[in-house]
Length: 199
Image (cartoon, rainbow, N blue to C red; front, side):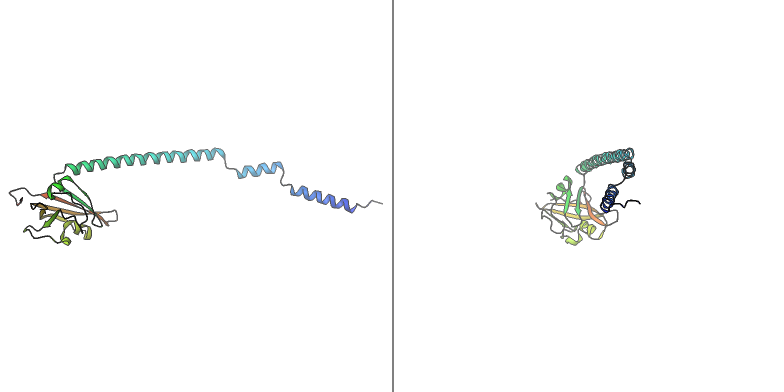
């Protein structure tokens, strides 16, 4: 007659089997899982090398662009300094952001402030000597409405009381979307004998 298994032995055997079931996959299975989960190291190194090359090229292009921008800025500054005509640049809000030495020669002082509240070192006048109203300033009209002025004759009355007769050219500066972002005005002093006036 076969012996019955002891109930205690059966329980211990079952618990042992459960412990073995909880021990996880075999070593071979773990290796297979790790192989699937880890990326290919050679491919990763190649990707990193490619990214580094792209970053280096981008950095080089930025440096070259900055150097080119600096060179262009220097050329523009040199051009403004040597131009025999006065140049005034104003931002969209009317602030005078740049003028060259020829402007100081014509106006008797640097042009500063804004087109709405200019420093009173000068007065723009009609050719007959009557003051030109602010809304009629060519540069102001360029930044407000995009109006272009070509060769408008005006009189610059300087703080010392002397006058300079000029031809004014004014244009708006547009961004790529053709929105006005600034304005530029050029003042060409008229030579004596063709309407120039001094004193």
